[in-house]
Structure formats: C-alpha cells, structure tokens
Image (cartoon, rainbow, N blue to C red; front, side, top):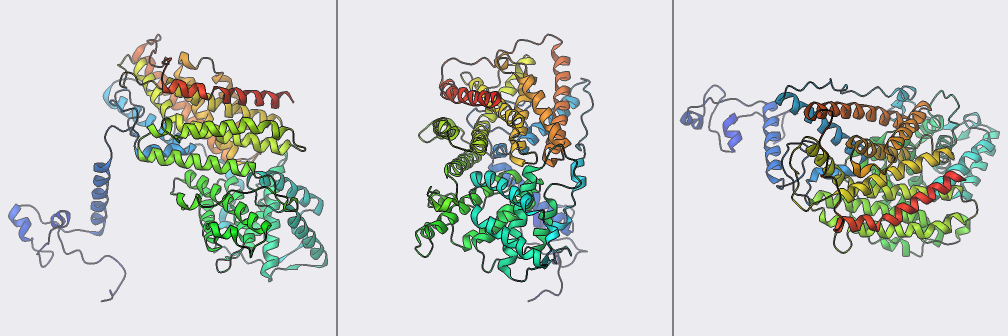
Length: 630
C-alpha cells in the first residue's frame, strides 16, 4: 500500500523493545508494553532522532568488535603511554597514510589528543594550542566558484566572439606549452589536429560570431578553450600582478559551453573531461574533480575502453586504438590519484586493469610522444594502489618481504629510472623531458614515503618513550631505524628536487602535484627535525625545511591556493610541535636522557632494504647536482 506522505512511519515499538529487536505489544503510546512492565522499567517512546542515534551506535559497536587486536590505532600513535603495539600489524585506518593531507591530519589530531590527555592527568603547564581553524586561504578570495554549479544561469552561451580569445600567436604558444608538458605526462593530446582546429576557429571568428549549435564545432571550441586555460596556467609570469586566477576566463567560457554527452560519448569528449579535471585540481577543487573523473570513467566504460578486445578491433585504425589506450590509462592514473586525495574508494577494479595492454610507441605521424613516461606513471599508480590495499589488510609484512613485495617492485622501478636517465638527457629538446623525468622521481620517492612513513611514526613514538625515560614500547629485536632513514632520504630528496626545478623555472607555479610532493616531504622533515635524533644528523633537515617553507611562501604570494593552504597547515603543525617541546622539557629538564632507541641494528632485513636503495638515492643526488650546475 502506498504511503500517504513522505516521512518516518509511526514508531509503534518502544525504545527497549526496538533496541532488543523483540516484538512490542503495546497498542498506544499512553500504555506500557508487557515486557517493560515485567522488567519494571519505563516504557519510553521513540522518535526519529533517537532511532537514527541507536542505529549509529549499533553500527559503531559492530565496527569496534570487528577491529583486529594488536593494531596501530589513530588514537595512540603519538601517546608515550599508549601501550605496546605489534610491529607487523596496522589497522585499516593506516590506509589513510596514502594521502599527504590525511597523513597530516593524523599527525595533527593525535598531537591534540596527546595534549588533552596530559592536561587532564598532570599539572604541566602547556602553551595554548593553535586555533583549530587555519588561517583563511586568501588566494581563494579572487576565485568565484559559483560558475561550476550546473544550474548557474551563465551556462547558456551558444556563440563565441573572436575578442573572447587571445591573439592567435599567444594561443599557439600556450597550446604548445600544454602539449610539451601534458603530452609527456598524460599522453592524450594530438598536437597536429589541435593546431588545425585552432586555425579554423580564428578564421571563422574573423567573419563574425561562431555559431556553436553544431555539437562538433562546440566540442572543438571547448577543447581549444580548455587548452588555453591550462596553457595560461602553466606559462603565467609569477612576477605579474593578476586580477583573477590564470586561465580562469577561458575555463569559465568552456564550462558555460559544455553539454552532457552521455548518450553518445567519444574520445574527444573524454579528452575535454580530462582537461577540466586537470584545471580543477589546480584550483584545489578535488571534490569536483572526483565527480568529473567519475563521469569520464563511466564514459570510458561505455566506449569499451576497459575491454582488451577494443584494442584489437580492426574497425579502428592503429592510431585510433593507441589514442584510446592512452586516454584510458590517463583516466586510470587520474581516478586513482583523485580518489586517494579525497579519501573515497576507487571505481576501477584491479582485475580490469590487468587485462588492458600498455601504450606502444610508434610513428603515428608524430602525433603522440614516447610512451615511457606514461607507462612509468601507470606502474607507480599500481604500486601506490598495492600499498594501500596491503595497509588496509593490516599485514605490513607484505610490504617488506616475500616474492613480489612492494619493496621489490619499487627497487625494480628505481633501477629502470637509473637506466633510462642517460637516454633522456641525450634526446633533443630535452628540457620538458627532463622535467617529466623528475616528476617520475618525485613519484618514486612518494611511494617510498608511503611505505616507510608508518615505521617513521613508530620511531617517533619510540623517541617520546626515550625522552621520557620509559621502556622501549616495541618487542625486543624489532628496529625501524633503517626504514626511518629511508623515509628521511626520500623526503629530503623530493625537497631538493623541487628546489632545483624552481631555480630552473621548471616548477609549475600553479601546479597541484608539485605542492603535494612538497607538503608531504616537509611534514616528514619537520617531524625528523623535532626528534633531534643522532640518526638524522647527517641530513640537512634545517636547511631543507627552511628552503621548503620559502618555496611555499613564494607560490602563496603568486596566488597558488594549494600552496597557501599547505603553508597554513604546516605553520599550525609547527606550533603544536613547539608545545610538545615544552612538554618534554617540563618532564625531563634541559638535559633529557640520551635516546638510544633509534640506534640502528647493523644486521637484519630492514638494514638490507636500506642498502638496496643506497644506489638509488646516490643517483637522485647526482641528477639534482647536474640540474643545479647547469
């Protein structure tokens, strides 16, 4: 029978019977049921709010009961007296370490909980904590995001005037810049056809307004506008005063022209969605990016790009099949990346990915660049995905030991980078190739950070125990010092690379990825700097931290909204760590005990892991030196 109106049904059962999931026999709300009368308890009425709360509590209790024992929890990661923890187990919450912002939130939140615990249990005077609200992101004041809403009245444009575009020479310069960068990293742009479309648009615009009722013309115009928006973003002079975010004018126009094309999507439509996603990421609009990448992925499914048979279909030319293959893998990389950043599950199953071939190099009328960079990005995405899956499963032994463990995969990738370097630097016009190669090194270091950061945090906990004169919290024989050293090496390597790229003007002033690599590295360096452990004295942590914060300040000053946000978070974290220093001094005095827990064990599996990556870090140091000396 259809209900008369929307809303909750009549809540006949009383509170007790509903909670116990037994039948309640009361006839009206004024009389008590026989069960409550027999137990001599009050027969309470339920409300919709109470019903929801009961369900939430019940759900939480089930989740709590299912949590494995002997796991690292978010609550005790930083507590000096939080109890012992088995070194080879992590909780599913450890999967949050797969994102720099989630890693930061865990550190910051646990510091807050530590201070609350100390405040309630002792009379130690700790300075007031930093404001819970970070400094407002002033750079977002210049950006009005209302145009992104689908019901906005500005999404009504049906023509394009020539005066809405920059001069054609400027347009081509921006488009070439996009192709130089994105064609190596993402591999979905066809430079020849794009330039032909651009020439046609300008010729049509000289005759009058371009009618966009034709869906093919509209698609071509949107494609060019998005390339202009990303191109201006990449080539913006950082010393120039800006009135709005670079490229936003053309991006708004492209969004106003965009129509949903889910009935009959094509590769061009997917490329448009990819460009929108790339620009939204630069605006720090990750949730919008997550929704757009979902649309792109489902359109790719509709086109059959997830089927290996598509790439054997003779109905398509060799170039068309290769283009579809590269578009698919670009969507795969972006979907995995964005999902990890917003903390939402990926929509791509692992078994689908394994069936699809990798891109293949060929002539293709010089329309597509060498596939090495895209293939390596795919490999690093798969490694990150495997790291997250293992952490979610709880047994981190699989990261370190066994056939096909993550460290073996990363070691293989590091050797591939070392091998390919001499080939890359010998190619003509290698400026952007070198930049793309350094992007792969940054991703390699990020994978190393993801694996080793949990051990780095364990050592940080040992440091707190040592400074407070407590016993070693971990069972005898387990030592994570070597893995912590690898973590510090990866962090300082990334910071040095980014600093060198900035000096050579190869760092995108409004890029998201570079700022994310920087943010992750600075968190590790800052924590290592505050640990004051002899183990880390050989690393220039103070200089690395100072240079990285200067870099964030520079990009904040030119209007990078991501840099602004990350800088504010790091300032807040530094204040919390200064409060921790006050706590330690109040407990131990000016001469704390020597921290011997962080001394590495000379022999063991973790030591061998460090030795395997010694060649790789020597390589990253040498290529940084070569970049700095040019």
